[in-house]
Length: 196
Image 1 (spheres, rainbow, N blue to C red):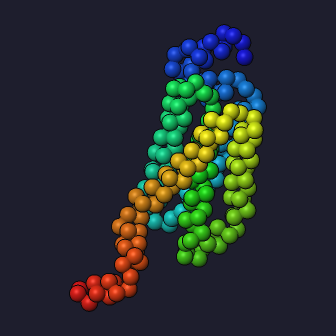
Image 2: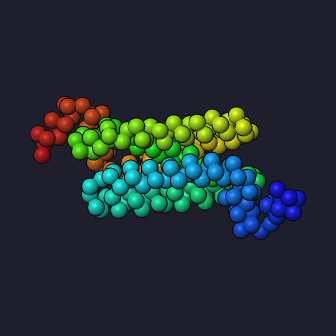
Image 3: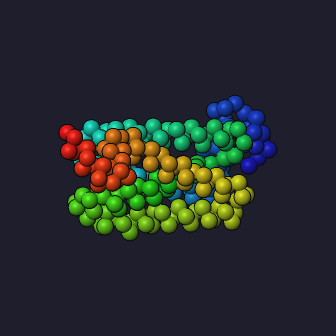
């Protein structure tokens, strides 16, 4: 990078700096690695999201939540990099990786036979996506500063948290009722049934 380009990335207006963040200031290796991993994660998230539910209304809510979460993480990535003068999109794909891991656990516990068969058939692909994410986190742990690894791990946790939040928002009372009945035990459930 030339001194002029470096100066524009550090001292330019917000749009210029955002362009530098998204383009890794022209680092071909970082662009190739991160955008490839981002596209792979994004495609897998779209596939997983598309078969998450058969209920059209719930599916629309889940897609809306997922797109809102993606927009939040994107703006979060840009905001952090503007504040601390970093570059990259790795928080995006790390968050997607956290979401994939959380959804994987969630769907593994499903009782839907059709969905379970599909999950079994695609398990290897999903496993490769997660392994790719872990490999890239390890690569940057070796190649970049320690704060990058901390950011990657926090982004994975952020993605998993957003997935869990979607479960809470979309399953709402159903999940809470089942959890409350399980915690209260059979005696309380029988008592409630007897009263009604």
